[in-house]
Length: 298
Image 1 (cartoon, rainbow, N blue to C red):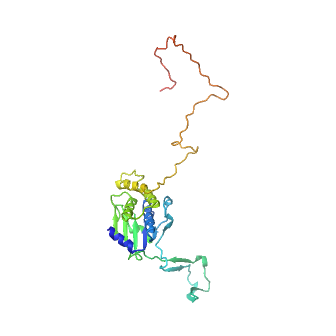
Image 2 (image 1 turned 135 degrees about the vertical axis):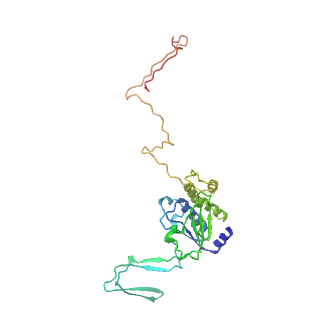
């Protein structure tokens, strides 16, 4: 199976990576790590997600590269879109002048109800030859971002650990004993001998920590700990949230205050009774048992 994947990677220069709607840190961290690794290997890569990334994903390297759909680049169809009301356009024609195509929209009797700023230009989708679907149990989770008509000839590699994954794709890589997609992705990249730099390692460590609730979940696998150790050795930076500070700007856990004691009122000096002992003639009751009374009632 690994040899088949290597063959597909060698054959395809354009590669797509897809994650499902409302993806969490684990899924997106894995997808972006794969994106960075493939880019390092001189591939043209696009990451898509049907929904906008949530705030919690903002620290992941490459999050600004996520798109809503695969773009056509130079080979996709170009669609020009503008508002239309019945009867306002008499006809549409075009002319060629000095290497330029002019599209003429001839207005009807009542004129056009739009102007230049209402015109949209959209590049159609072009299917990458190879698509990785990461941490997504069902193709339907990709919504319209994954157009089956456009991608009918694409090879699909499905990477996930969730029990509900439907096993779709030409090559399903399903690690049911894993506790995160990130640990699967780390081992996948390692098996392909892809370089895992600080950015990739940090992304994967963030995903692993998120999926296992900082390694506290009972489902956390032994592979998760092994992977975390490997990522740290590669320079992964663990991203933690800032500790909340109190209104007094003191951190009760890390800046213990000195104990305070009651002081005498201003202007007065606290006096302590002087006790003098004669070693040769101690008081008669010196060795007698004593009873001390407290002021606290129980």
